[in-house]
Length: 308
Image (spheres, rainbow, N blue to C red):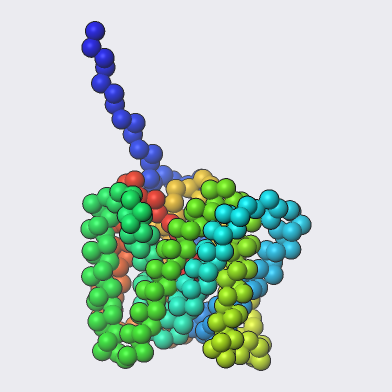
């Protein structure tokens, strides 16, 4: 009697509706991370100092909480090395992306750093994973969009073009950061991982700021208020909430939702800072967002959230 043909199991759904509570939390988190670029651009402090204080203040909240819960006990050597690597990559991300926001428009910097999932897909391909055709199409569309944005910024100023380059570098570092972090979090709790990672990033950024001779104090009160708002909003409320909903919501849905940070940040920057990117930038931004959306909605591609 012939054996029945084996039917391959259907791949898990990449997109499904989140529970109502998590959908509401995602809206809150999206609003929080959308303030990141505008707050950085408006803070009267050196870029590396902003990056340091963002991580240091977050560590000041997380370290006592983790110690009280005993979350840091039992970390093995390999886990500590992976978390330290992730923290170093996170520091590199902030050291490039935060200055970019002060050099080019918030809209351009936010859109270019949002290409993180594309670089994550390329890293995955380098590691032997299969990248679907849809993702390659998305990468091509996003590259075209980045070329349009940077081409327009060439006509604006060399400083704006340099800011675009830093934003792209920030996206690459962010992709490497989540790759290392994904390996660590297979066995490490979210609390332990986030605490150690932020602490390592803060220490490295402190060294960078000191080497650059950036002032770490002496800011006006409104600058400290903005640093606190950046920490509570984008760093803790935004990313912590996104990490929370990843337990019930697919990474694809989370990644796509984070793309709304691009128009959100542009709107806040326009209303609050009066920033109006050149008209020629907008077609490039549309192509960028479209390309990234194609990548993160590709089947069998594990998408990751952005870490502005």
